[in-house]
Length: 483
Image (cartoon, rainbow, N blue to C red; front, side, top):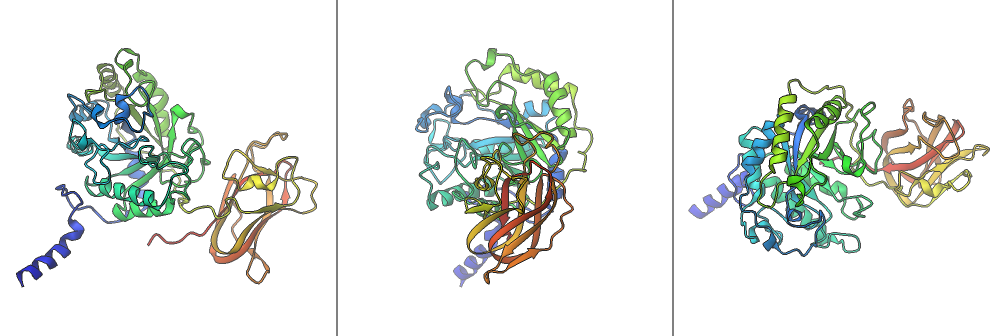
């Protein structure tokens, strides 16, 4: 009887127990609205990115994925020093590289032996990081790479076990370390990683993260690919300045984050202690202040050295930043918060058809998952349309398209070329039906949501337009509830 009572008590307590046995307070499971979470994020304004992982002990940011764990051997690792440096610049949050592209984990993970507990350090760096920064009142974010060259999560090797592996690692990170404000994801759906949102299904990972921590924002490193006026596969638009991803400081309306290293590169190099760092004046006046005014947080990267400490030249510049800037007022709340697009584009790679095109800009370019190519309408066509064959009857409830704002052979395309259009779908009885949608939007990206229908084909008919009409991508989704 006593054993039965104990089992019942354990079952009732299970939701409050974390994997790994860390003693943390119960997570708040109230699901705040996305806009509220984005506003809380933007109020932070300025944060520290910390690139510290096995690349620290290499001369490359992408080291040999079989680099032995024995090289990870800092003699004076101090996350408290990192937190002190962040506070000296009046930062309000920090983000640590829990796992970079080479797959080494700097937390006490049960998913792989390639982790810090098997290194000479034998300490959970993520745990020390979150504890040290929380003591100073800073919010916590974690960086995680989908691309993993050590565990062969890369093109040509991906299978269902990889997806489960990623979910187990995210479960540890989002269960063992208290409230995580944002998960900064990298190495996914980029030209250099070549891992698509179909290979590692985005919606499944997104939904899983939200099931573990409903208030954890996703900040996916995909601003280099997707247009900047919608939240494609992210809650926060993430820009990497070193990779040429520059946010528009005049027109941006989305909640965003822009990252830049204070040194030349992200991870520590032997030259760093004696090399100039970016100046406080440049960082504050040309980045922090104007980015904040554009609904964008500035996350400044530091690279702790091989002893686990931030170099003196960086410490000195952070003190100067703290004298120049303070986070005195909440962020401007006039940002836009469109519904994030988190489902795979059904139109991607399907057979295309259209009225005839201008020169080489044929219809196949409008669903090639490349926002740098486009279909251009031949302006002398009697009827102008763009059509995608879904091959089978498919449930859909969202259709959109991305118009090109710069078109070869046509000048003055910096405003929309579209006048009037309608959207049709072919049902399973082979009858074309028109979708009655609000078409007041005049932006280059138009997203239309409607009650779910079953469609064999989708056709956009352009009834009136200016020469140079070009469509980068047609977008078709079946959006389903998270729960």
